[in-house]
Amino acid sequence: MSGLLYHTSVYAVKKEILVNTRKKTQFMTMTALLTAIAILIPIVMPFKIVIPPASYTLGSHIAIFIAMFLSPLMAVFVILASSFGFLMAGYPMVIVFRAFSHISFGALGALYLQKFPDTLDKPKSSWVFNFVLAVVHALAEVLACVLFYATSGTNVENMFYVLFVLVGFGTIIHSMVDYTLALAVYKVLRKRR
Image (tube, rainbow, N blue to C red):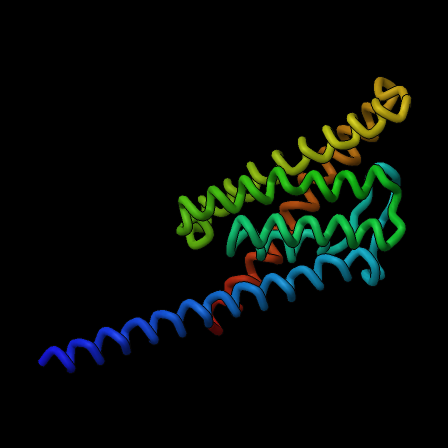
């Protein structure tokens, strides 16, 4: 009898190790794929509007949102990669700073979803989450621009329209569109698992 218990417990431990290894491999693979996408989008995306400090690159937040839906650590890593992608693509530094500011909404959103994972499955909750996230996103980007220009000696007072309309309001719209696209992709991927 004790031999059977020993073999059963060894089998359970081996199975748990295999499951954990598989989960870690899936996590690393998904992080690598989203990282590659986050780097490539600013470099190769043909549709982009750049009016520094504002820029609108179609789909630039999709990899970030999908990572955010999966894990806080993954979200932070993909955001850092996205910032690097904007730097490699030759965008002005203020836009690279804006990309780096995504850490605020990405980390907060991922932590919120970790605590309330059913948010994405409820249309009303998801829409409210999307809007609040977009506002946090916009505030972080405006703050990044203000800090960048204040430290570079630019007169920020004359930039109200650029900062609050182009960057602020524009980011809210852009963020909400990319969130909606990312959620649609995420739901399809989740069904395929």
